[in-house]
Image (tube, rainbow, N blue to C red):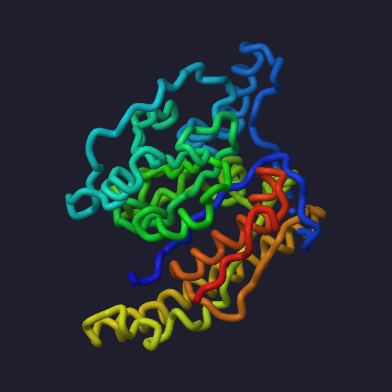
Length: 345
């Protein structure tokens, strides 16, 4: 077991899905998107007006404005995905583990390692894909897609959904008739278009910000400000308390680690660092629930009495959220049809 992760991986659900009748929970500045029928010259004029206003008030610099979602469609079509011929490198210059795992004899076919051109990134991005298949290994067309987003270190630190959780991913989504897509690049980027490029290395050092507090770009990226955008989305949100749980104790690691000192170090790291991180995210998650409640937006929340910022909890959350919330929203099937909730032995 590795040390606590700086940020948890995420499971993205479906838009415009039926809502579970659970806890309801979100002030929303509208996204800067042009109406579908807006003429190009009107859009450009609006964009210019926003930039001038931002410069005048020093709330948004031209650089910040350029980083906001474009008001005019880029018109760049991504090419067809291509096979990824070789494993990307991790932070030590070695092959990333996920690549060998999805291309081995046991997984090759249903799983693929691909490169997909991203117009916004202006380059190819490595992606792991698990295709929906029937009992005869034939791909099923027209099935929904789940995007699993890695946490902070991601595949560059071999802490992605394949390297850390392939077995659980397989057991959760087996015979579920859905495709899985896992972007395998972007350590410490949090899938955000930051205003400042980190210095020193390509992972994370230096400031990454969304501009001055209260600026348009800052507000655009504030989940509490834009919470109304979540209306109509099936939401399953979980968090631990930060207090050590079963999988954070030394006893849990006995038999898993040959080195007693390493066993003790892992447990201490999870209890201290992982506990502090999860305690902070717990406070943020309560803020999100309060905001969603204030806007009458339905969401399913689960606050655990114990639990640090670590993989055993995320594995459970993946399986449970799929069966109870995300799966029914995407597939229209009931929780009973999707299978029993997974429980740790």
